[in-house]
Image (cartoon, rainbow, N blue to C red; front, side):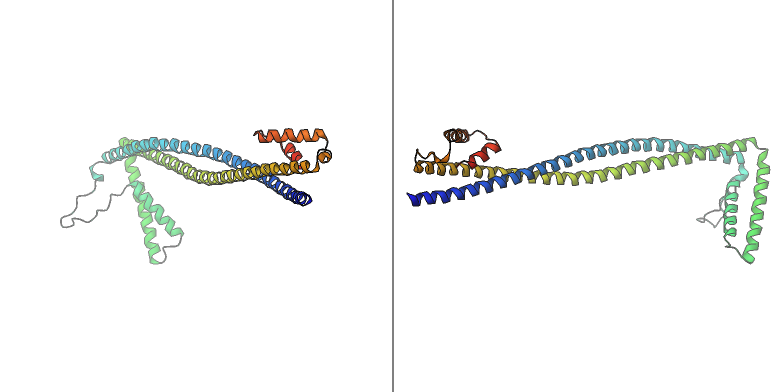
Length: 297
């Protein structure tokens, strides 16, 4: 009997140690579960915010694309106006402004466009810019200076000849206004297209961030499920250890005899029996009650 009692005491200490280990393991996994839950929830909140950003950028992109379509239509109308103004200007200049027909035997060669105040001023501006940069020196400098004087004289002569032509002046002014409207419409199309592209690029960037954060949230959720599973496993083993522990204690009490009282008050034994009854019936005990069961011997 003494040898059996010694073995039971050893078993009781072993089971008590295992119960403590399982309880510690369970609590550690529960702490990890709380951490993973917090991380997952934070990441999911970030994902929701990023999705809102993606939607906003998508809406901006669609709005800008609609503006691009409208502005392209306006630009097309401006292009038509410019062509009409050019035709009106050519008609106002008269037959003398029309390009000369190609000479026989020179088919396929590109004819030089007729000189206008606009083309002459553009050439003069180019020559002045090149002259300032020092690109023309020596004999070439003399030639360039002569050409610049010729251009200035031609421009002055053409302006004098056109001053009395009201129709030509009106046509030229209409062309100027049409070209300004054309340029403005083109700039608006370019600006809207750039804004649409920027919104599209930002939307793609947010989408990548959504995927990255979602992957991290899913990883945290997997770790959460793992930690809960391990916590449940450790808790189950802890409960089993408690049951084994109290079975051993019951046998030790029986061996000590009713007169000894197993070193506990009757009320304590009744309390242990009540807690064990709740445990065996499947009821959930609080952590304090479980630790109380483990302390009884």
